[in-house]
Image (cartoon, rainbow, N blue to C red; front, side, top):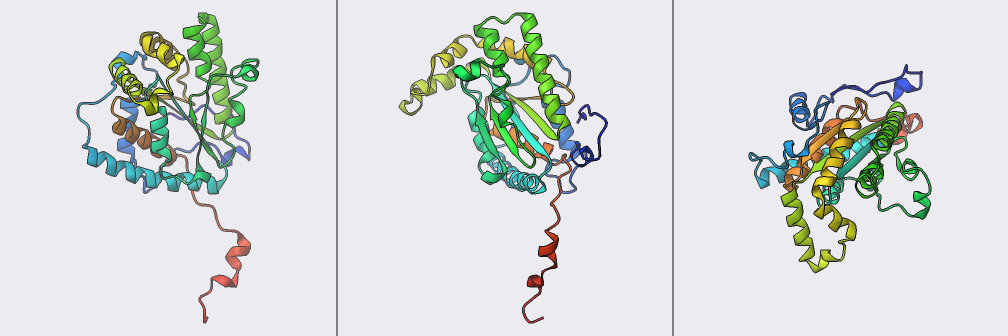
Length: 305
């Protein structure tokens, strides 16, 4: 895994700088981490989404995937709680993808076994009038994690580039400018102790259409469909092309992109959890020492001693 660019650390920064030390009991060992990176990390490769898989033919059975997800979920709860208890590092997970790619489903899969104090999710909708009157990063910054916090962004600052590219016709110069601003913003987060994990859920045109039809035919889901959803479904290629440009321009050493096949929901959730757990296992987390006063108390002596 490529280390982020770091400025010369001060005494305080030494405590929170990124660590590549893998936990000895890692659930995602180094050999598996390398395979995940080769399969899913952009790492300077050209982004042509039709050339990235949306599903694999050779996948684990449903039972094996369920068992693995349960293992990963338990491990995730422990790691995120440790990050919270340590109170130094920060984790920001960004989930992006075309409509129906499964951002909500992947987030629910991540959060299902995690204590609420250890992880929260922020969903960004269409900017309101106040948000639209500021720069596109203004509404995002207040929601990034503080020390000891982990946050999932369901959509993010990237919608401030993708949507205008398709619906407003941003010029190439404007796209370059916004992508540069995003890269600078994410570098600021990394340099102040945040690990930025960016995951793009890659869904095929055929699967997207099938899922939208399923939503339309279900009264419980039909009411959620918006004109924007319809526009995305009707213009799959335009949105895919916009993402290709943005993913390439914003895949940096300090915050690389992962592209995950999203046509199969269970496999999508398992890979997302694998990458998240593998990332946390490489952040140098450890449980803090107990309060000295509490540790010295006679209360911990066995009764009768």
